Image (cartoon, rainbow, N blue to C red; front, side):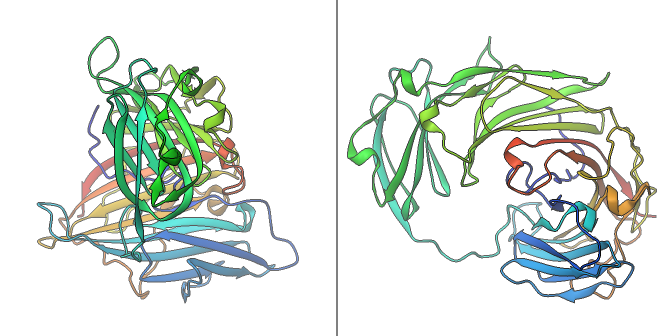
Length: 434
């Protein structure tokens, strides 16, 4: 697999599709003679500051309430923007930064909806409160399932992995309470004819209302049989542009509680369906495929509430050499591959390291097609004077950049997410500030 040279801009969806900076498109069409209330929810690290803007007015400080900011748009306005600033202290780790500071801006209109979400430094921690832990114990016998070589017990907030042997016993700490637990048996291949490192879920068994601390299945051995085996389902893809190569592909199973686990990797030809008894309402399958050519990428993600043969259709390619080098770059978003306004967004990201300082700065901006209203450029709005705003990179600084254009088929977040298709094109590179 190739190594991308630049910072990957993870726009798409928060936990469901692609965790990332930026925001997710909202629901419905609004506007008219009455004010519109917009809600923007921020997950991840708690922001150090938040600001909002209505129409052509200035950004003004805003207050989060239960992780969300509310904006009231007057009936004579349609556009708005949200900016938020985040910092995570990582501590020393070799050549990695000890601190990451990020600023995100999201620009949209009332035509895009009234409920949106973004994430502050997803994957980093802002010292969440300690969660009580208890011991979950049990034993598993997967000897009736051909090819199994390791097991996973998927419990709240933790997946416990261990090699398979007959009647394998386990014990680990997880969140106390009563919740859903899944027992997963995998067939990992490390040599031909299958691709080295390939993974396939071979069997799955579901347990509801499992108490922690406690013993799984009441202390009896969890026996995986033929009724717990998965079944293969076909995947095809089409319209791969000339010169592009499939980079990676995976199939995942997403639970109603927003947990997720891989069920097939690679997944260019097939994925697997879990037995009905292991699924619940709200679960769905996620098929992901990525292709690249040089510094250009394209990604297709398809979600399905029930397993069925699926075709992933790649969009036309987008080749972009990048912005003119500058401390505050402007990105050209001209692309004819996606049509329509609702569900289309344009994202840009750049990151840099201040000279001789163990800090990484990251800036992202996302604008919907409705907000751009036919314009073909994206740049960070003027956030000067706001608490938390990043200083511009100085002359000579090396900047990694990524530009992404995304189209989604879902109109409400997250109610129709389980049947969403998300397609994106992306370019990335590096320049030096003049």
